[in-house]
Every structure is written in structure tokens, then in C-alpha cells.
Image 1 (tube, one colour):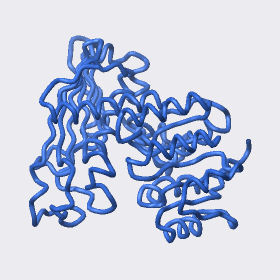
Image 2: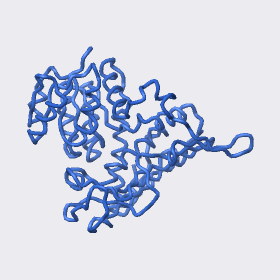
Image 3: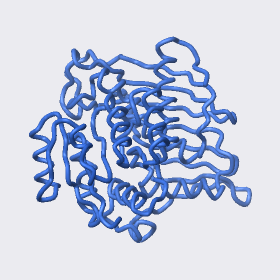
Image 4: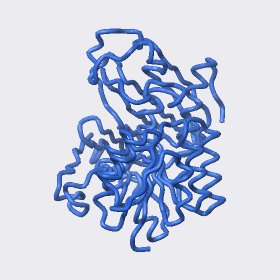
Length: 358
């Protein structure tokens, strides 16, 4: 396979902001089909990114009938991730599905099972793994420089940046708010760096404290309280089977100056690391404490990938390379499934007031 033919299902914000621009930069990719329930969006995407003969659909099942398509990118609201992905896999396509894997763990399991049944590749869009600081920290963990990581924090805090477009505030379509939207990135990054995917129990709290406010000073304009049906903040303690503890914090609109998104802090037996002010490694050498600030400017690790390559660009390149050369993708569906299991357990714990055991 020299050229990969891609079909895009869902031509809204994330497709236009991430998937299609990144794929368009790859010489070995042709976007040949576009589907959206709003036909005009699919037509515009085909005009902007498609081949001269690109096809446009409003029914994704019609798109999947095209046997020439190799790969599907699922860029729809969370509710439809699962059934579209399952159908795409069974139609003989490899699938990149935008995060989170699914609205529920049961739906995510269907996707995982379909990938195994069909032998097709499935990956989930956790592009923050491709940031320079993330890759450096992952390599640091893999070489054992931090020792056993037994405590970690997953950070996903915004001060006043609630997304007011699309269906972000719609619980039916999304399954939740900041926890499932940005908390999922921070949790994925933390589990990946720790290489720990065996949760034991979860205790979570979910808050609807700010959704009814007006004159909000929100980054994207005031939200409509009547439409804000999801949480504005969620927090959790996750205990792993090996005894490690992860604290997860997520909010779109917390009254806090401690703002970090898609970041992790790790504490190990040999050293620690955080992404609070760039990437920092801390530990003890020669009986003295040290803090090491890692330089990640172009000319270091980034020079190899191209100074202008974004995490989305690197994600797309890595994914297409995995398809062409029959390699495992960087984000494995088994890993993304655990993320969804934990997110669901946090919501369930908050709802019931109980600790959720795995």
C-alpha cells in the first residue's frame, strides 16, 4: 500500500481543526469521501481537502459501502463513536476514532471486540502523547529514571473556558462535560507514562456549581444555562492494583489560578516529574536535591520531526505509517478502553456516592 484512501465521518470542529489539516499534509494520503448529517459541511470539507472526485454523503453507511476506502476517521459526537466505528471495522476499514473512545465502557468494549474480530487497526485520537514534553517524559519513564511511579496527578483545569459551540454541553450526545472532554486527555497521558492500566477502585465527585451563572467572562462567550446539562467540574481518586494512586482534576470553569490542561505530574521512588512550567525532573544527586528543566526547543528532539510539526501532524503521520507498514498504532484500543472504564466509574461514583470497585 503506497497511498492510503481515507473517508471522514463527521466534518465539524475537530475534523476541521485537527484531522483533515493533518492528513492533508501527507503525500501518501488521499481523502476521497466525506460524510456529515449536514450536507453543506461535507461538501465544504470535500472542496477544501478532498480529491477532485471526492464523494459526499449524509449517511455514513453509504460511505462505508465504498470498498476502495482503506481508513475511516470518526469525528462525530461521543454518542456515535461506537456504532460508527464498529460498522466501519466490519466493512473492512481501519479506524481512527476521535477521543474519548466512547460514551460508555460497554460501547468501548464493542469497538475493541470488533477490532479483534476483524483484524483491522483501531486507534483513538489522544494526540497529546505526541507533544515533545510527553514523548520525553515517556522515554524517561521507560528507561526507569523515575523508578516506581506510585503517585500521580492528571491535570485538566481551565479557569473560564467552557466550549459553547456544537454539542459540548449536551449530556445525551457527549456523556459528560470536562471530565470526558479534557480530563480524558490528562488521564490517558498519565496512564501511558506510568504504563499502568490496571485500576482497582475509583472514588469521584462531580459538580454542577457554575452552569446557572450569567455574565461569566467565559473565553468563548456566555453559556446558556438551559443548555448546560453536563458537569462543570469533576475530581477523582483512582487506586491501581499495584497500590499506585492517581488524582484526577478536570474543569472547564474553575475559580482557580492553577490552570493546566492535558498535563501530568509523576512521583517515583527515584525521581519525580511535572509539566507545570515546562517539563521538569526533580530528584536527589550526591546528597543534594535537584530540579532539571528540560529544553525542548527545535533543534533537539523536534528537529528530526520538523520544527513545524504539531502533535496532530505527528499523530496522523504515525497512524498512517502504522496502517501502511502493518504496525501497532501508538494509542492502542486496549489502553483507551481502560480510560473510558475509569471515566465511567468516576461518574458512577459521583452519582451513587460509593467507591466503584473493578
